[in-house]
Image (tube, rainbow, N blue to C red; front, side):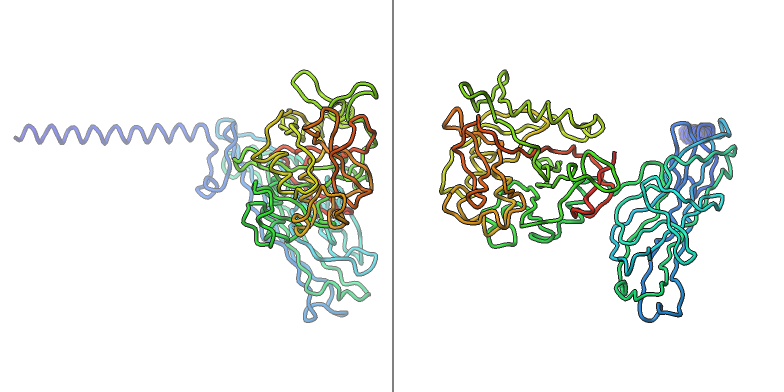
Length: 494
């Protein structure tokens, strides 16, 4: 019995020795590969592939609130300051490290506006040397008003990279090197009536980070910030159980669609000019999850027409049929001619593998948009699917862009008046739609401007009508700013 107890004791001691050795080996291995940092840095820092550690400290949020109590003719300016920082600690393996980072701001909400002609909300940025930055990577204007110099952010929203790939270096594996920035927000007291900005709101984050600053995924921003409830901001969630009176007439495909006469759904695409050229203005039809997997794509349509085109063929020979070997001329007009007007940088933002349902449907003058939806792309669709980058809008895209009370009316009845009066997709043009007429080999649907904005499915594909290129953005496209208005359209990160 005594011998057995001694063997058990020896076994326990041996196990303890092995555990201690394993812990020491693990500690020595970590010490060799990773930077020697204090405990708080280990918790907050991000270790790079080379074993260096970079730590970002956010600082305080900036805010300004002007009221009659704190802002008047004799009170002076209102200011707020924060000091974000970035710290780089080298791996003990090399004791040297270099990294780059971005410095900028994200303005989620800003109701401050101009009382006159001068900037009122100014952001002064000093880098780690104390130098005031006078240029912005994302085209913020540098101004001086009443002795205050900085970037004019009056009324601005979105993500702004002030400095891109700013270099930080260190030769220390203990304390490292720290860059501390100073961001000062000033509401300038002007010698004019500024009561328009009383109780104005500002939600702004000051950001230092490793990657380019943006507002996040475009789809997430629309779903989480723009959609609140059906009808707010012109958005409707088509889940079949909406809160408005015509919920049973919605698509029921869990899409988010813009409806009404003029929602704020503008996007600048194909240009990064400070003022978006009219030819580069697009609008969001909606967000679509065709695979029902929670992954949405933003669907855009050109705001203005892209000229006129024949849907297919010649006077003597034309067809509306699609197949793997034969495609109508409109396919090449969109996916070759128009596609080649975009640079590769912008082409890369488009989902060129999207599957478009081009089986078509019959024209029925009594159908509501829900009935058209079902046979065009919904549960009763039974036709050819084409993989392509650029298409045209569907009949149901146009129909669901009208205000919900119109969804109860027949979209194909020429006797229905003013269907397009509350439909932002209505144009004063005879315009091709993507959908072919399935009970004929040479007809396709158009938007019939001469009939108050209804649709018509009895049009020869050889006719020459206007077109508006339409496409789906990739799901991972990031939003860079803008509010969706025509003068301040959404901007996507390049």
